[in-house]
Length: 479
Image (tube, rainbow, N blue to C red; front, top):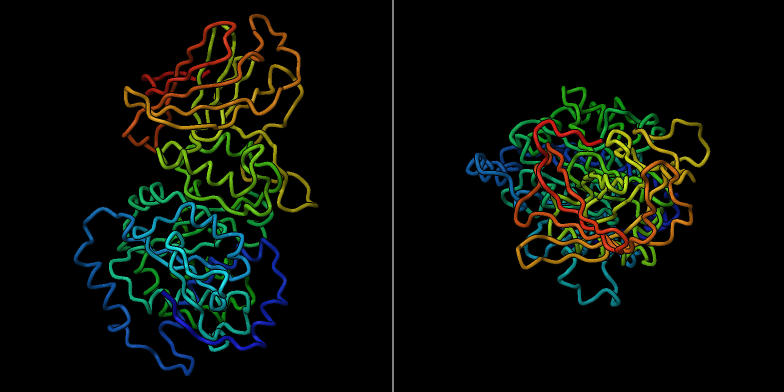
């Protein structure tokens, strides 16, 4: 399904000539909603729209279902793409998109050529942007103009029953079951804005620490957009020199709304190997990942696309535990186990408290190539050659149900550690271990506000270790 319109050749050339630094591209999304509501309520000739007609469909449906729990049908996704980027990014979107279940569109800059047709049912249906030169932000904020039009399209389509609008890039990966659970915490009938900070200090400092970043995706409740539209023209004039994320944050602050920051949204303003971060994820549901084109593949011996598909194999079994860190100990061998469910397991040849293991190993690099520390919005651990502090690393291999209805995830060693055993008294070498099996409950979502504990099963001189997830005992100390 598509909506055709013509974009002038001169405008196409302008978009092709625009610089596209990853930071500016990702932060552009958050400010779009401001311009959307401006254009939605004011034609290009400054005639106001009839608000009673503009909001009729959404308001009528919302009022009839306001007390029901939020589900996936209440969420509309706006995926911002282009024909050129869609060639190599559609695999990212298709990995989380659920045909005939998720609602929304991918918005393209021009009609798909023959190589894209027939349009696959595994992709979101597409829409084509209108002539963005007619939008009020153009040409003041050229990079946002197409995205503004994309959001306007969503309203023109008239999806019924939407409570939330989710904006994202075509290289954003969502975990939609977790997203629904998080949004259920909020009252969609009130002014609610939900997003996440950048992982790096510099991008936050350039704009605002009290702001959600667009590349990770963000959610806006419907009533907030209605209120924002009434004062949007003055706000745009007041902050016209701001980058769009900062503009959004400023306009929302002026009407008394601050973002609800969720740690599960990941802008991934990091470079190279982010396995350290993913192996020590914060205690919060995993909601999104981003910037796959500037980080290393998530798994050894797999490319970026294969890595995403592999990660989503575990997500199809249990999103609530994705990347959730669980720590336990094998006292007889003096080992610490740190499980990042669905991604990796680490074995340390010493007993290390959770307060330390929850800090990510700094395997990644800052977003800004030239900057002074501190770089990140969280504490990290430096990688070391100390045998007692360097983990044996095992990556997710497979997932299946067991005969007794548990979920079994298997993790295999990625490469030899190439260090001598830890010399501490009572420690044993974990070099013989080649595989770790992790057993978790089936059919029960992990509660996001609590951690889980585990027990280790291991027979000396064997090459397989078992880890069984369980609820923590009252006042159990993980150290």
